[in-house]
Length: 388
Image (cartoon, rainbow, N blue to C red):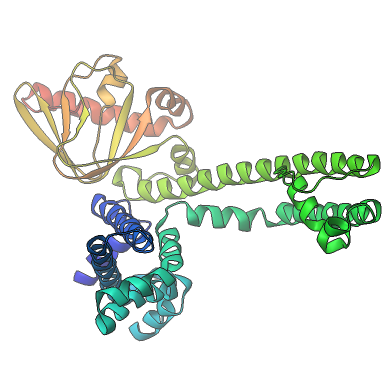
């Protein structure tokens, strides 16, 4: 179905090569648009260059308009937005944050259509912030960062409370101590907040400095508190980010494993053990995955796509659900064949160390791999071509 194929191209979570290229192209277009808008605001820009920037701005905004229409059309394919009818799904998307940002991003196109290229360039300068927000919606890590802040909201709130307590306590003390000496800077608590914020964040502009010994002692305490706050924030966010990346990778690998028929008879506990040892990789068409004579340090399970196994002038095609590379691990020998992708492929990689650890924990799974290897060796003796 055409709509499904277009949705797969626009889906930000898709691992397909075409979808990744589409995302890359989308980010590039946004950057071109932001650059053209920024160039159009230069005072000394030549008229021809300014007109060229306006044209580029109009083209980019028009592309955004067609992208908006496409995303509006495929909205019923988005699982989280599915409603009783297609119109309901489209309305949900249109009123979502992403839909609103995409709609506002096309306003310069309307300006171009109504007032010409020059008006479009001038109008686009007002909406350059929206194009930056659109860039944020296309950034692959934004969702991860948002999830990290959500998961770590309790410790982050505790740090924020500590920050506020130190902020107003220090501002109050600075007002009491330095208010008479520097009324222009510390004459009020709100006025003292600027110095406390600059000091607490360890920025230290030096435009406001306490003059009394007591004021400097307060400043020293604020500096130490600032370092502590930044250290706490860094630790919380770093650990939360690492945990979220691991969780997302686990879920993604689980979904890929579920597509491989070889694992269909394995229980959930065994799959959980396997998933933690697999890594996904994507290859474009005609890419060399395995080279003959290389060390046999891993085996591969094909999730999608096709590969060609080339040995002694013969070629064998493997498709989704097949695996290759196990013979070099089992025989502890170099690769015996070249493996090249016939189409864009997504594979799961199991390295040799995890293979032998898995052999002790999941003997039935390894036995199945060994049985398939024996079958392929027998096939090779009969003239077939085994995976390396």
